[in-house]
Length: 349
Image (cartoon, rainbow, N blue to C red; front, side):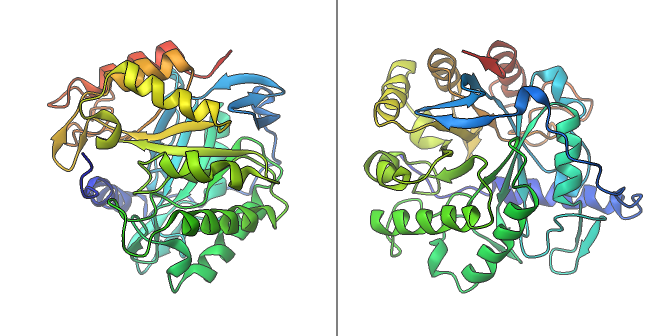
């Protein structure tokens, strides 16, 4: 059963905006230091259905984060986080380099992507840069190429791709959770293929050959279009990682065996995947994430949790205000995911 997209992003943003007020007086970002990719994260690529580093398969697991609003990833290594998917709330106003910038439309201070990547790299993390919104609009559930801002959106993505084009530990996701959750609204598999080809090629036009993340359909939860159209997208293209978001369509009534079967079908199709989001609560429904995590460990597929946040009032937050695992009314989500990270984080196969 698939439900309407939840307000989890809106809740997270509201809390982050409150915190952002405290960064108004931040010291400006220092000049960008010379780029040096951590040796263990050099040579990252997609080989067949696997992520590899210098030709050796590796699994990355981690968390989504809101570092555009402030904070840092310094506590992540202790949890064995290996990858952080960075939320970009307003792509139009998001600074790529330079100082902390105030967005008059979002009414928030945004830290530059360069400063975030530098901090994450210092902690040995792969960074995924993913736009969740344009100006004041959340892009979830939209058909990308049919939006009036699509041309400007692609131009901003090219600028990001240019800035990070020689840094293999910085990956770019083309769009967060596109297309309506139950189909319709002009969606077709042909549209998905055309949009994804255009957005991937847009990044490549900047000379960026790093890994690019491509979402599925139905707000990113469905792998059906990846199975049917993924091979066509891969034709003549490289370093594409498909991002699946595991909420109701993967968690409700699921067993480890059923999830393994779905992962196996994707591997047979020759596509590399990562679960770029999952959480125990969506649309007010609490779900069991353990079968997914068990299947991911067995199949050596990375899972990226929603959300690295220190707030026990948010049932999807991984940590409490004190930095402990958040197990409040959420199926012991914090402890469960931390145990998964300890078991599977960033390991070579």
